[in-house]
Image (cartoon, rainbow, N blue to C red; front, side):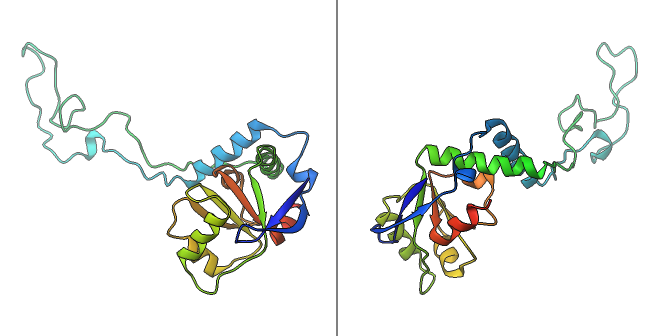
Length: 207
């Protein structure tokens, strides 16, 4: 599969890059493994620090509110009872670890499947390697306008870390910068357009 290479001014450079069929056009693209990988990624981001107080942790008197029998109503213990307003919670959330594991081969198939789906939907663009002289959000916005992607959710894949490009996009909610080695299934799918730099294509072709 061949794609035209654009520069950051939105101009076709006349060059073309080849996307490997072993990564961007696999025959065994699998939606279920994509689901598993995204589910694992989001689960591993959870802190798991949620906590509600049970009746033994509530600050309140432990005195029995009324006699056991003969009151004409349900029996009560202390004011910390879950039946009463301000009492403890029954079976509330407790701190836990949401981290799960997934086989490396399954994750690799999920990434290739996600890239295949993006290629089929024509949501991959290739641009020349670029950088900015200084961190300026205005320069990054000018690039998105030139590529006709202004206001759209995009992920730019660089071959290596570029501080100026990263800082130029940091204030933009709809833009993400990642390196080819950091690219995961969630980032591949969580955008309207996946922008690959020319040098990052070589790395992704060996994904």
